Structure formats: C-alpha cells, structure tokens
Image (cartoon, rainbow, N blue to C red; front, side, top):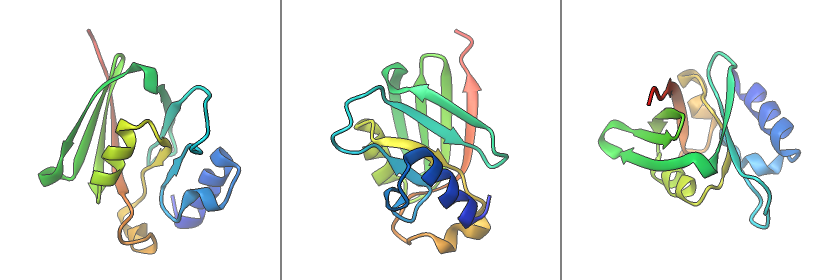
Length: 126
C-alpha cells in the first residue's frame, strides 16, 4: 500500500483528510461517545476490527519495537517504530484505524509518528 492509498483509506474511514495527521493511524475525535472499535489494515489489504470493550491487556516491548494487544478472541501484534505514543493512545482507546505500511514508504511519514510495518493476528483457542 503506497502513501496515497494510505491517505485515501484513512479519509475513507474518518471522512476527514486532516484527521490522518500524515501518519498511518487515525484517531477518534475527542468528543466521540459512540462504540469504539479499532480497525487493523494489513499489508495485503485485509481488514479486521475489534471492539475495545474486549481488549483485556496490552504489552509494550521497546527493545523489540513491538506492541501486543490481548483481546478476548484475538491477539494482535504490532511491529514498527516510535510505538510508545501509540501504546499510550491504545490505553486510552483513541486509535480508530491502524494501517501497516511497507517499509519503503516510511520515509514519507513524519519522523516522530508511529509507523507500523507489520500486523500479526492470532486467534485465541481458549
């Protein structure tokens, strides 16, 4: 997915061009009070959304540049760069869409923004 496709996808989800903040992550408006889901968009274009109400734990591994989110039915692993702010936002249920981008496009994004290069989805068998 190239940079323009990422912007188009974020605009599609948010309805606003400027909500994307020139990154691959769109957030809920601060006054939004509806149902909160987070949508993950993988490199191959596959989408999955999960409800924040089923997020039971999150782990941040700064030395591995990785976040692991434990939902009741899935485990989501996010690999990338500059992930600490994203981790803080996930604790507050702010991200609405998280899009994985190919490494070759990461230089287009802001240097201080979180960059997700890989999203892994595992289904809990519990």
